[in-house]
Image 1 (cartoon, helix red, strand yellow):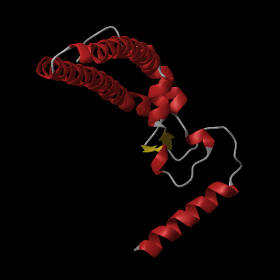
Image 2 (cartoon, rainbow, N blue to C red; image 1 turned 180 degrees about the horizontal axis):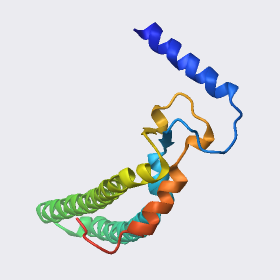
Image 3 (cartoon, rainbow, N blue to C red; image 1 turned 180 degrees about the vertical axis):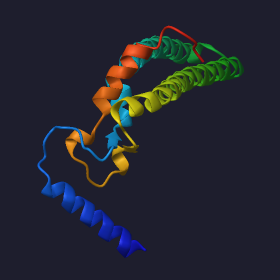
Length: 181
């Protein structure tokens, strides 16, 4: 079975190699799609990545500010250590440690929420984009669309990613209108 599959792949690869590498669309109705490029090249994906970068910068600024505040508190506590009795110092140090741990958890929760938001937007994009593919396939005479990453060989003209991006952009735009998850 493996040999037969390998033979078919070699025969098909030979047929593709024997054909000129023109940029015209293949006639077989089999095309490839780069999903990552589809997302990152679309208005929707670019908006999500821009928002992600902005939110990450905001979170980084917030983290930096908190870090500076905590360093100042820690320094103050260290300076006051000699003037405090050990029991009072230990109580203040424990409270400080608890506050630091709470801040770390809160900031990690914010980072996780941001990652969840991106994952949700990607999922929404691909759900909406996949609903557009049957019409596009019909319009272009496509019988099969393969994920580019799972394709052993294909001529560049088989890549319909730019066409799908155009169609997705025309219908979904940047994804800010319509229903959001």
